[in-house]
Image (cartoon, rainbow, N blue to C red):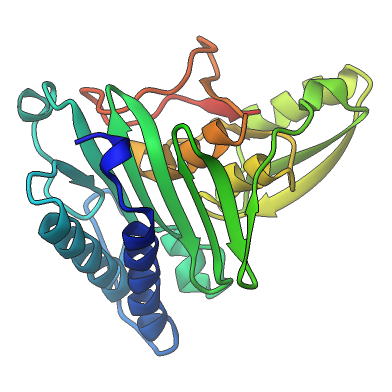
Length: 258
């Protein structure tokens, strides 16, 4: 299977269906569990994951899947995969628990380590982003679909809008911002949760997103595709090379979206 085999309307429907399942939980009081790494887990994470896995396996039965909420397969099993789905049923569970709306459903399709399709839906905001290699990136809001066009680099601007995590601000991020200020540019800080930060750079709402805290591949895969096919780059903060997926360790390095 390749990205050319993906039925966009089907994936948009699945992403929305997962979002609807999440919102049913969001509207009521819900229990919070904690995983071994102390990260929170809710009924909504499990429901969204079940919806997405069932739909993908029914439509594409031979699919390989990596999801935050599935049992992780050893690298020996994964290393020869030519393609796979990469899922985060809810990115921004902390934002979900705070009920601030800044959480997303994330489905990516990855080929040879590169996300070639991505679907990101913020159900509380009813904002959808999607991208397919060769077809560009799009934002659907208020029933309007807009193609995301490349916008100028932050390096060419006098005023730079930096988007940063609402839950994970780090000293390295502040150092990154200070270095931009020392170069003579003015800074505007924007806070947001979840993978929306990558999408904000993709749609021009923000200029750059530095991330120096820990993230996993499923946190970034879908939104990486949105940024990439909107003309932006998601690069390793140290090597300046693009992030790659299906590594032996699924932890991302620090990265910059620009």
